[in-house]
Image (cartoon, rainbow, N blue to C red):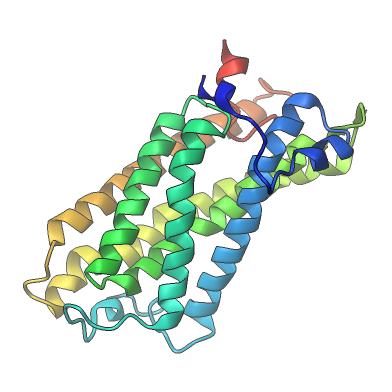
Length: 261
């Protein structure tokens, strides 16, 4: 797969760290990807949490408020613009990384579609000044990525130096469970309840002829469908672990093409 094109000549490479930790070679190869993503998502989710809960923005508790006072070409507050810049640059890089750098997996095509949809939503929601709802969307998604990458790191670290580390194993199993629950809670419960309700219903109440109504809602619906698709993967995965078909959690996105051949 495209992972053959992967060479670690980037200045910010975490590969030596993986080798220093005595990880198994295939884990040492995948570890930098997760460590870098964990760093980014922790930063972005913390910033989103700050905006929604530690400032005057009422968007989380009052989702329809994302459209109050909306005007074409209105000013974007600096603190929201910073969040957008962060996310835009990350997803721009992610499209490149999924194709050329990351391990190629069975769901990599869906992942690529996800990044394209996300980048489109980020760019256009900024251009049309739907930045308020954008912050809500990002907040509800990034929390799962923090958990996913944290869990994967523990999976990679449980066999280091040829020794099995029970603590990393326990953490990865707990991580897998909390990840599954929060995925459902944030992406399949809160997301439709807060975001889709606001964009499909409240937006028309507040701004009767809101521009690009169908375009944005179609993209958000595609995002929802991808979240359902992945949730089915997660449920099947957890079921396998619970029924003992899999002795241990090996990779939460365990369908690496190399392994499945």
